[in-house]
Length: 98
Image (cartoon, helix red, strand yellow):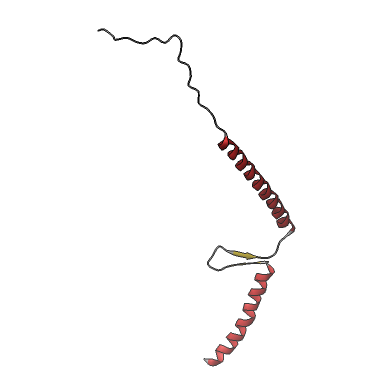
């Protein structure tokens, strides 16, 4: 039985090495039993998308700053409520007789 362990052990080493090489060749590694993916390669389209994302985030921050400034200006605005004039033709209803 011991004689079988050594060849299987030696066969295991290149098998693990080949699996690692195939995983590294794909520029990413999926973590087993998880949805996480470790990636380290960026293609040209990925860089373009990341650049566009950075521009969109900058624009988002600028818009949020503008919204905050407008909300502050609106909060500092004091409005006076003016009661409407009663209608001229309204008459008081007197006691009703049955």
